[in-house]
Image (cartoon, rainbow, N blue to C red; front, side):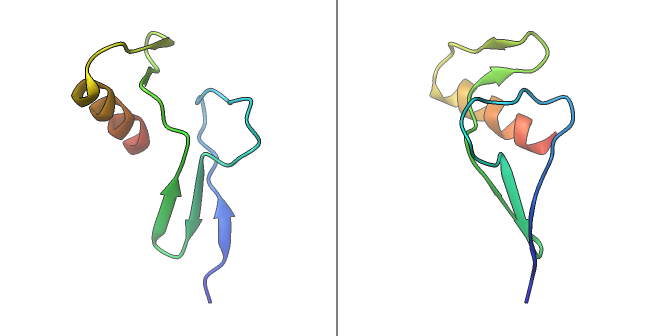
Amino acid sequence: MSSIQEVQVPNFPVGEAPYSRAIKTGETVYVSGQLAFDLNTNQFVNGDIVEQTNLCILNVKR
C-alpha cells in the first residue's frame, strides 16, 4: 500500500485556504488550487483560457 504525502513547493506562494497544493501517493501526484499566477511577476494573468491553462501547467511542472 502506498503512503500519502503532502508535496511542499519551495518559493511558491502560500494560499489562505486550508488545503494541500499537491499530494503524492505512489507515482501519482494530485494537484489542486492552480490559478493563472505568473511566479516571475507575482501577478495574475488576464489572458484567454488557453494562456491561463498553459501558465497553470507550467507552474505545476516547476
